[in-house]
Image (cartoon, rainbow, N blue to C red; front, side):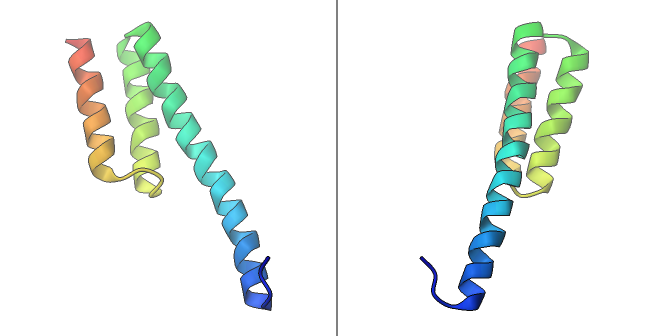
Length: 77
């Protein structure tokens, strides 16, 4: 357990951020899975949007987001 006052506050902050990051990552993953089951252009745009938001917030890296979007685009063709 953290001992100093700032370490205690940092732990609290890290828990909040971890929950937020997990929610963002889950939204992106579920949007991608939804696209894979439907294979429609509407679900593709939602998946792109969710992946881009996750990358913008730093939850996933931008190159990984690009790779995911590329692989999803191939499935539409």
